[in-house]
Amino acid sequence: MANVQQQYSYPDARGYFGPYGGVFVAETLIPALEELRGAFETYRNDAAFLAEFENELKHYAGRPSPICHARRLSEKLGGAQILLKREDLNHTGAHKVNNCIGQALLARRMGKPRVIAETGAGQHGVATATVAARHGFECVVYMGTEDMARQAANVYRMKLLGATVVPVASGSRTLKDALNEAMRDWVTNVSNTFYILGTVAGPHPYPMMVRDFQTVIGKECLTQMPEAFGRQPDMVIACVGGGSNAIGIFYPYIPCENVRLVGVEAAGEGIGTGRHSAPLTANAKAGVLHGNRTCLMQDENGQVIETHSISAGLDYPGVGPEHAWLKDSGRAEYVAVTDTEALDAFHALCHFEGIIPALESSHALAQAMKVAPTLPRDRLLLVCLSGRGDKDMHTVAERSGIQF
Ligand SMILES: *Cc1c(COP(=O)(O)O)cnc(C)c1O
View 1 (tube, rainbow, N blue to C red):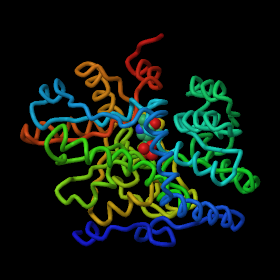
View 2 (view 1 turned 90 degrees about the vertical axis):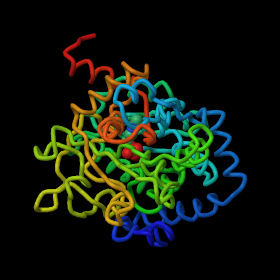
View 3 (view 1 turned 180 degrees about the vertical axis):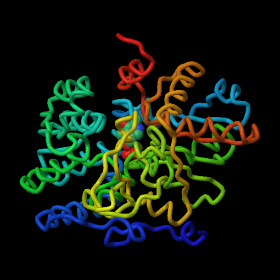
View 4 (view 1 turned 45 degrees about the vertical axis):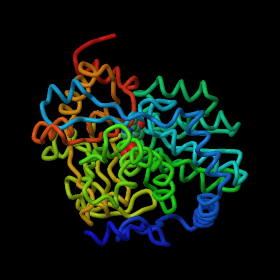
């Protein structure tokens, strides 16, 4: 694997991470993706673009996000030290805004006055509506009717921000159906519309572009860790839905051989029950979904199967193609954490540190809490705390049998 690390330069020119990624879309979308690829290629090296991106991250989103030592929690566990990269402190409460800011700046430079997005729990929809308001774009967000019912507060937030939320009643009426509808809109309105995709999935160049915008997370860690803790961490742990917060913190660490990279999927009710959202951990076969080839939960006929997780943000049958490649190449490891373990970690962080984490982030934390007691006290576990848990109040209360 030394090879992969030293010369890591993925994807290739056609958007492949080993056998994963690529462009599997209707012919009508090819020109739009070419236009996007060209624009990103230009602006990723443009000093004025990068300066504006940095400025927005700093003064609008509130970066850099700090790294905070979970002192009481680590003490309680009696092993390695748990450190939290606080993406929950960003404007809109999660890492998603990093990517939305980047894509919005690109949309403006490409002269597109209208942006569209898909959303599951509503976090990406809110982040998109937020940057659309900031730039004066028309904004349309596609959301499954099942998710709209579960996440009414986020639907209202998007409306307050001036977005139109379009209900999607096809299929399972959740994220994957919303993504299909957003792609359909894009085909029809490609001349004036920019599609702000929310994770490291979709056709090339999205997995690469979203990664590059999210690497701000890991780049900050590279400087913050030596400053505050004297060295780089022994392990970096992040939850994986599509995989954007994980790749954002992993990517700058890929060349650091001594840093273990651990992605945490949602085991739901347990991998053995089939009710989970953990394609990598369950060794699912490769298949094509949403414009790319990746590791995908499917039945023997290749039909995508229903997924389950207590956290809506991890409830996705596929995974970003780069994670499938990092797993095959051995550079990153993937494990899964159940709903119950994530809930326990959620309550532990509330109780010991005064931080209410997102249920997605609680999966990464649960993994850190599992391994910390098995390691010496001088080891450093860096956890990406991808978002705050305000959105999850109802889910947690319901599970605890509390009504409000
Ligand atoms: C959306 C979301 C995730 C999952 O998305 P990734 O692309 O896998 O990062 C994780 N955490 C939070 C807080 C989210 O809102």
